[in-house]
Image (cartoon, rainbow, N blue to C red; front, side, top):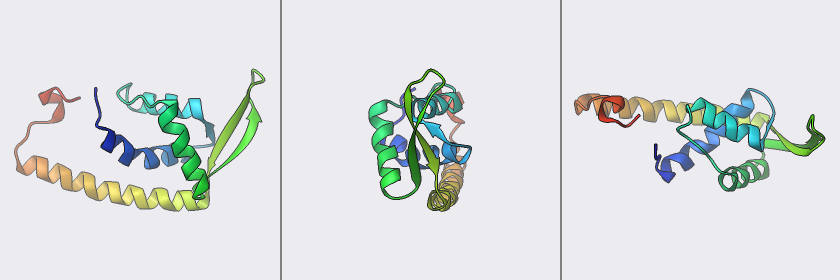
Length: 120
């Protein structure tokens, strides 16, 4: 399923912060978690994720440190900060308002559910 790049961009920060709120992680694992959470319908690339992680680190929403995997490879692990948790709470509240408004628009326009239109 194609998801418009504007929607992907808008959801990327809360998605990553939400994943990291569940525990520290590294890039590849975050990519796989996004894919898993979306039942394979969202597939991010390295080129999309790593600039986002670097920006989140720069603004203080995540911190990063180098570690070593079970196989001996170096990995950069990311952890959500207190500021990141605050931003996640704000973004969640914003998404709740938007989702509620969209659902009301769709119901009032008598549009069938997305699955009935082949959008799922």
